[in-house]
Image 1 (tube, helix red, strand yellow):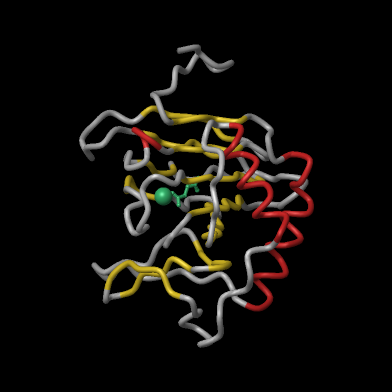
Image 2 (tube, helix red, strand yellow):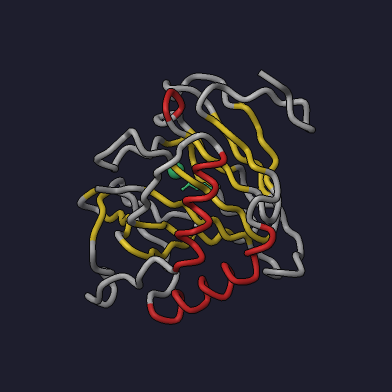
Length: 207
Ligand code: SIN
Ligand code: FE2
């Protein structure tokens, strides 16, 4: 295993592709804005009744949470309308990143879009609502930088801190597919592409 430029050595199944989405960043942000015009960002509620600090929307099959639990839905519960289609620029980037990380043939059917304002965070969790765990998760960072926390298969395993910048793409699958991960509270900042926020696009194969 080789250490990256931050001196971090990643566990098997985890890849950090620095700047992989830079060339498409503008097109991705345009797509996000178009999605949000139809399916607005909202702060969903966990089954425990807490509003999530990251605001979310979806394309394709959509990940949702409410008092009834976590699940994938074809429709946006806010509008009753089908979530917007997975934009081709998002799909192509996800497929390319998965292939570059050693997961050729990834066929995403949904993408969760997270929007973080300063202070917003995501607690350690597993992505475990998908049917097919042989498909990886592809996660694209846009705008303000964040610290990604990546742990092990148990919640109590120590988590490494991975700095993520605009255009970075993280892929995890295989032995790392069910690793606990999260995002440290976003720091205040200003990014030329997004202003005071960070977006994260997380492509999945839900079914
Ligand atoms: C997630 O785990 O859904 C979010 C990851 C991120 O925002 O980088
Ligand atoms: Fe996640």
